[in-house]
Length: 350
Image (cartoon, rainbow, N blue to C red; front, top):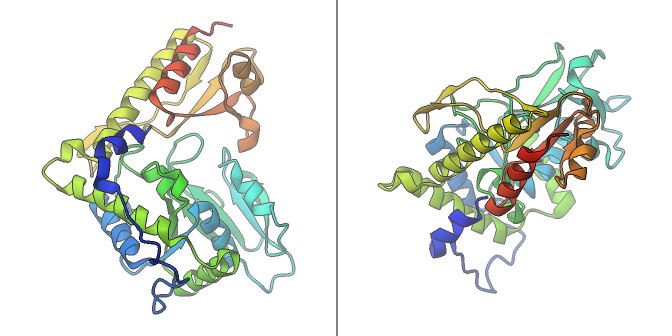
């Protein structure tokens, strides 16, 4: 979806890296996260301050190969080493479908997936993943486990003004962000964590050191350039052509098209969201998530299989810990593919 915007920007985000540059593992040996490029760190702080979506003061920045690696690093850093059994990791359903896979991939003795946070009642320490706005259903989330020994990880990949109103800066102990969802550059494989506790940040950095001996400098330099252009355009005289204005307009149009298609078909339903004031865009609007969480109504029990038969590819509810009557569909494809999707959806009658 974002490709056309960056094409129009032309050389504004072009980066030329000579063959002799960035050859060392180290970016800044004096930093806690020694493989974090200083310019990237600077642009992260600047963009959060421009948008107003996260507190950066008194936070350590840890860079990772996407938020996936940062999630693994956070589990490693937060898990008690002295416990007799792995700490439980939970998230309220519907939860991000990769959480169980990533958590249990290595069969770690430090942590294990324990399912839906709403039904979790085990005594003792636990880690709860709070994704807000949530993937897949787009709703704002808070922690749900009523326990005194819980440790929270806030995945805020979608807390950007094209997806949801920015009501206040997020202020949590450990917050995850990713370039792929904020700017569309998934291929860079770059994410960052804002971490309040220095020991946790050090352990996360150590995990990434062991896992990949740091993070690509080339990707960090490119990401820094992209973030700088976004901040420049958001603060400059051409704010109407800013990245977030463009993204907001496209998402608003697409959600309008989707709701019209759902109404025309009559076989599906999508969630309604309460409108809020966005402090960044200075307007009131309903959240317009990066994914549509669609329910097949009536006698259709397996919505994913049903839509596959209509040449629409989705991810079924069972992957997210809920009923297979639900499916997740990306709202971020290229215009041509999205137009095909809503056209096909609108013509489905049975």
